[in-house]
Image (tube, rainbow, N blue to C red; front, side):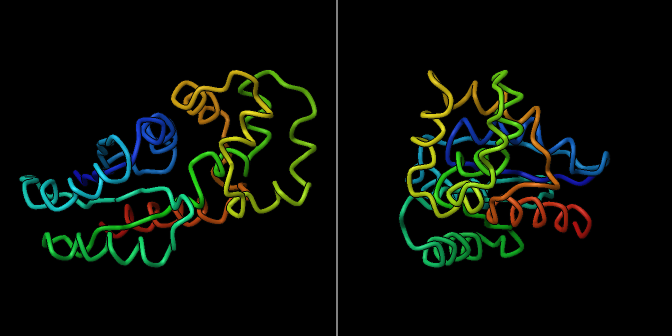
Length: 184
């Protein structure tokens, strides 16, 4: 049985992946999602967890871009994986933050919160390329009053279309995981 271990920046990413991954991974692939208390906690734990993991596994590291340079973040995370002896790890960056992935699928947000006509806004310039939004969480909170990260992620994930999302970083993540699962 294949095993993928996802090291995540935060609990809301786990809430999303717990729903999405069963849709895209083959049935012979087991996965574990390990959330952290932010990006610093994640980065400190990468070398330790990758070296200590005893059973055969491939790691997937997922972190928000948050306004930093995407290529620098990815290079630093890849270097941590290589130094820990796990150069085959997949590193993916959510640009700028997880909520951009939700804004890339306004139909899912609409269904999750019983809203009307929200998906019609997908063609507005800011929602056509949500990865460009540096304030995606604020935008989502404007659309969904009282939005909460973890419970909101669970609700939205249940309705997301993994084959149609306007977030480029979401699509890169999905495609990377699918490819990794096939080759693992």
